[in-house]
Image 1 (spheres, helix red, strand yellow):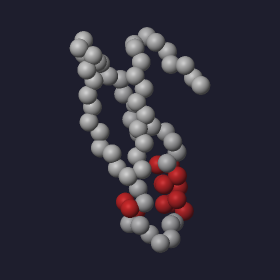
Image 2 (cartoon, one colour):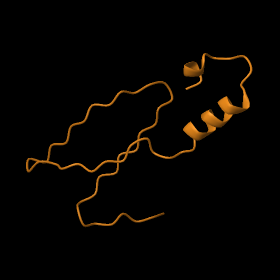
Image 3 (cartoon, helix red, strand yellow):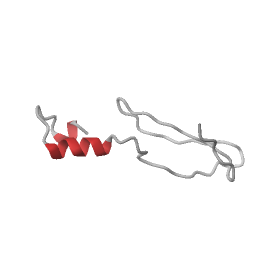
Length: 67
């Protein structure tokens, strides 16, 4: 994101707000999937420097426990 802004030496207030909004910890994507009867799940993702992924797989109808 910082590089998308042109890597400025000094950020403007608007740029800081944009960076903060982009790094608020909310997921970029949430999606439901269907795993075939053979139990195979395959997904290709692009991983950049400092990316973090969390995959939570749960059977339909089961609720995840909050810790």
